[in-house]
Image 1 (tube, rainbow, N blue to C red):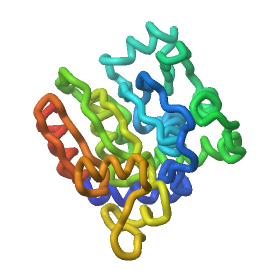
Image 2 (tube, rainbow, N blue to C red):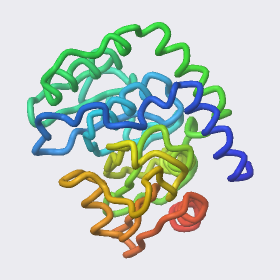
Image 3 (cartoon, rainbow, N blue to C red):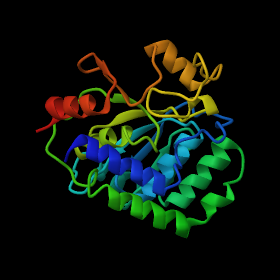
Image 4 (cartoon, helix red, strand yellow):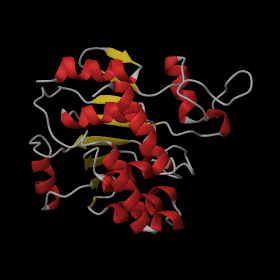
Length: 253
């Protein structure tokens, strides 16, 4: 499928969801010492609800893709939780293991945000319906496993859930069953709004002091996602299309 078309469809899908998973609504009051582990697959509408919450709370997580037909991490889910169902969250900080998106979202809010789940997220039926429609616009991408080579070390992806440029990258990572550390860079202020790499700031763009975007800019000198780091090859790169091509060339079967 043409990459620009995929980005256009991802834009429509995020619009349908009201761009949930774009803005850091309230950073988590407490950050986990050990990475959260999320077993999921990209096109799953219930997994998306959890990923949106991670962005909105500015929580990072280690992602273990479990596409249909995948054999790399699905057996782990069965061993750890007793059934192959997604999403599945493992928090080694507390010993919690949770299925069900509503339970995971409530857990993330009460444990790390230290506040109740917002009412908009408690309305699970409309949330699920619009997330299902979002998945339909993906036309199956990020659903089924492809033959791939497993990297020795986990990759790192800087992203935020609603970004239409990040979605094609996550879809390919999922299909190739490549585990990655997800660093969520949701928008933190009005000046962050706008197209990829073009912000609403008048004059010089300045990220929020002490925020994750400030740290990212200090690292890369640019505020744009997706950004992929691969310790296996030493590769670090921007640009959605280039990242997709790199992943397929490097890890595709």
